[in-house]
Image (cartoon, rainbow, N blue to C red; front, top):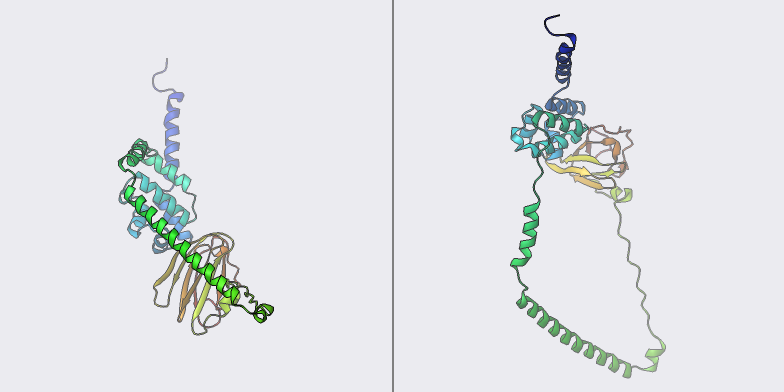
Length: 281
């Protein structure tokens, strides 16, 4: 008879060591987000502007400190938002967060919401005063309209009785001209831009992209996401600074000319344009 642990008893301990090594090899949530942001060429300021998540929270999450998020629900939302901004799949990070912080949060009970919906209509009765006022106004308006129509009919009869044969023999017919179509934001419209300013038009032709635009003083003109088919035009007296979150999805027009650049999908481009030729500064 042997004394001590058998090889079968020692195997679970070996498996635990292998699992621990795998956990150590996997980067933390904050580290993964930071590495993806750096690989995308974005600063913390860029990510904060694109996602509306405050810079101190971005710094805290990249340091794996989720206390500033205000709870698990908000922490998960920030992780998902930041992951998409740096072109990272958020699902593995959310699963990792669940493993490290006790799984998914409990759903919010819906019973109070439905109870409020049942109670709210019972507290208010019909507003009879408003209904009576509306009815009186409608009657007065109908009477006034009828009287006005009667006066118009009498005027038309008087004109018909006083008309002469010569007037009836040579009627004058006026033809309405078709209304001019509204000009679209096309290349010709951009070409007509003032020569003393720089005009930049950004069109999301092949997908959605985050766009940031600043004037020559560095003040933000626009900061947001253009969906496919959306167009934005920026104008300044001397200079326009652009940051394109996904330059491959963008068609760019500067001072009436299309910029023929081979932007790659997912590439982040920082561009500056002036009143001169449409060349990136």
